[in-house]
Image (cartoon, rainbow, N blue to C red):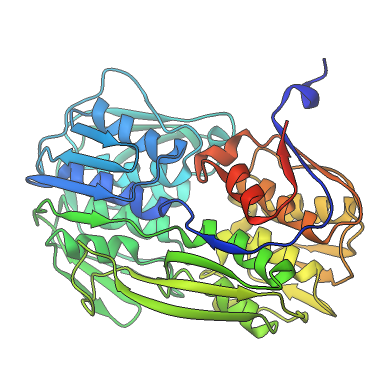
Length: 448
């Protein structure tokens, strides 16, 4: 049997209507951070709504290997018994991050100032991803980090106390910013990180919820080293990036409406919603207050949550403002599906970050759209798409990228023939139960 036939794949039959109410799994970014900060806090941290996907479980197992005691009374309920600021211990073996790029980059910051050596590895996909953009500023803080031609394995050597730096990010990146803030906790002095554009602020919000004082100075976030963390309660909202697939599905095929419950609507994450509204989407947001355990309602530490109502809409192509690119970065695969169904042309520029995700998402989406009969042009830092009446059928390669796989599953709603999507096993990293939820909502999808 050939390799493509052995890999997990989806078969999506054309058409369908979506309707009803859905609650997608917990936010991956927040689940990662709640575990890590809970691991170095003093006291216990109780996490509800935890995403029990492979990426977050890799973080959980790594913390256990570093000596943190963690209980899971239920899949989505986690209790982290904090080891305290100096309580992590050297792992007996390399820490396996699986497919989790967020975990690897944030652990680089968390472990940079520890008094022991660590090695970070991952699956085949993660071992190809660049790590120097995190390693470089950490080295400026005094960290001793080695990569192999800029990629994993990442070897972190025991270091004396780190020193604070002032660092301007070349491109907006929540992962780099977060790694530096985590390292800054063990640095001498005040570390300042300046962003060229807003990126996700989950780390800043959560550090505040754990009792750390941060300072916001325009585009700069500053943190004083040596601060301790206090264990807390964290309620993880439903993941906006996972809800995004159903938001687009609703725009394409929810004639009677689709309601997405308890979605995290942090304004540094909701760029896709703004883009869809600019395209003419019928989307209504019903705020539901701050997430419990991260500050009360109205507290700046709270992660805002809302119910999102979506109805089938007549979309039109747009030129995406570059200011919205960092706020939509993980949602572009499914945005490109929406653009392919819109009237007129859509252009995205300034999205070079998409070339260094789990796959080269620009190239992967361009190839897949072309296979399904959608006219497009791959740009150095983006994609141009001519909208059409939908998709033809065919076989598309996801390159093991969960967001590519789920995006093309949504395309089936406007397809004229079946779509086969190859190499979909990694969907479990961020969205366990995707096929069952998609099928229940009305997509004609089958896992093979």
